Image (tube, rainbow, N blue to C red):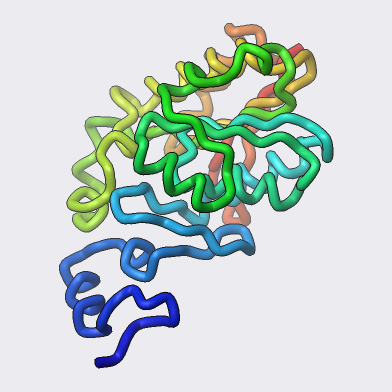
Amino acid sequence: MLRASSEGVGPIEELIARRLRGEPLAWIIGSVSFYGIRVHVDPGVFVPRPHTETLTRGAISLLPDDGIAVDLCTGSGAVAAVLGSAHPGATVVATDIDPVAVACARRNGVHGLVGYLDEPLSPSLRGRVDVMTAVVPYVPSEELHLLPRDVLAYEPRRALDGGPRGTTMLVRAAGAAWRWLRPGGRVLLELGGDQAGELTTTLANSGFSGIRVRRDADGQERAIEARRP
């Protein structure tokens, strides 16, 4: 019986049936290409999206070669893995509330910690982090029904639902960044829709400066960046 790949992920007929049922392709073949590297994605783990490469590109440019980066809500660890690949001398730590996701991130060579946002971080990192990234859930609860049926049926809801207006976790991640960044350190938060205005106000009120929105090649707002004075 034919098999789908050298990784031995299963008979081709079975894999086709799984895809026809709507299961994410990354779960079926076990990995996805992200920013030039192959990232393992275990079943049940949020699949990294191409638009997250905008945030990743910004983080790479801001992280010193010997710096410290923290990636919150790391999922498969895609962003953290790319940062570690681009800056082998840097310290990259990632967190996620889901133990399955953290196990997947560790498979990708990431130093992953289980816990809510910044709670599992070592106190020794406080005030020393150069770059903090976060791809938190940011789909507005009231718009979840607009997502593709396959996404709603298979991917973890807690990786999608960002609460009213989709900004609940974004605001919390901004607060976490203020606690851990060194003076001059940067936070990059992925966002969607028209969330940039609200997040700009939130970050400014929290004391951040140098706030800018990062757009993809099509001009879509994909991430917001801010500096801790």
